[in-house]
Image (cartoon, rainbow, N blue to C red; front, side):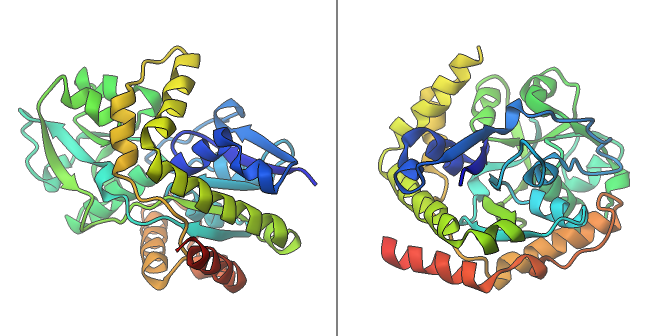
Length: 313
């Protein structure tokens, strides 16, 4: 069978796996689906909903069977009624991003965000980080004006079109080189911000060998990234150049060196954080229903991932 794997640069592990040929050694018939090339549909106003494109395409004709994303999309999928299951989770990526304002901004703390424009890649981990920060400050989603910035985030921030920004590297490198910043919310201590991988329950249960091959290949590829961060960074730079976008090799290498690689089983701490996010998303009107994230756990998948970690050690 052909296994369809969705990838994009924001999930660094799958993006590198797409280019280094490791998965094809275990699964010769792989179809790589570039998420950026798929129809995105109409994105909801970030004040009233979450984009469901990643989860919808997991089940769609012409979509994919397995995907790696940030923290929020599996919750979105569950909220949309899809029967997804976790394949694994990375370690914390707290160094990868934070909420910043310009150094001369009058915004000094999260409570000062009330009524201000905050840039996010809506539907990603950035939505969750902002929601956690607001909740800690006893604010709600309705108290700020979230702006779905897309690829224009750095420009919008530098031009003053947003007042605060949930930024991540390597984009933050470019902004820090042009203006002074103040960290409003450090991710560490508030949000673990892991990468994760998920699929549909039907695919997992009916294709256990393929699931094992994907997890084993991710472990091997992630080990290669940690040993060869500059070579891995070159994949991102080459991809950007092919799209006519400037990307700095040193910045990408630095970003990859700071990120945890390796696929881990989902644990209670991760599930508690997912549940907290799901509850807050629902309470703030961003999720159509409350969900139980533990319904997305398959014990045999966790055992499989634990076994690949033991083999890697």
